[in-house]
Image 1 (cartoon, rainbow, N blue to C red):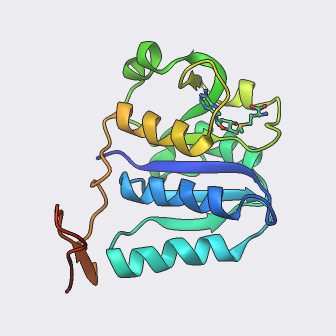
Image 2 (cartoon, rainbow, N blue to C red):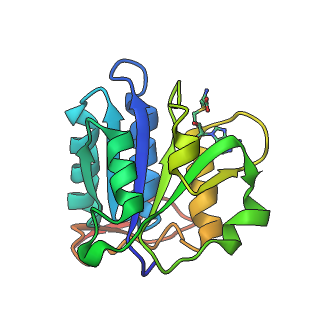
Length: 182
Ligand code: SAM
């Protein structure tokens, strides 16, 4: 992806969501997303796991916690967070939105973009702030699956992460694990 891309995870719960929020971060990293923002409970363990995977397998995705995600989103969309006040595109992933195959291809890729994934309760002003509301099928399933499919349809690929700073490299194999240290 050559445009700056963020994943915003809403409503993280320290006790229940550690694995699933980590998996959101791992998908974001692998598909070449630049920034992960987590809101809800301030959970440094998730942020540390993403940093640790970056340091072993490479990658530069930054991960941070945000106490005011809806304020952050408004500023992002209005261009208050970008250099030269470039307005952002916010894509809310929700089972109530328009089908991914109809809508995603019509969205400009020339501006900074955030994919927003929800938690147990998504604030209703998300519908006003985000310009796009995209469903990966009109059934409830998983934020991790929704994010991976949306990024892939967006044109990102799971090897898009820049691994030039990696300490370990996986070599695809049919005969067991093949990993070299760099
Ligand atoms: N109750 C929440 C709500 O009001 O939207 C949904 C909870 S769901 C387990 C958590 C998140 O997974 C959603 O906010 C959405 O980002 C994502 N998700 C689940 N199913 C989806 C689908 N079919 N399409 C797109 N995103 C989906």
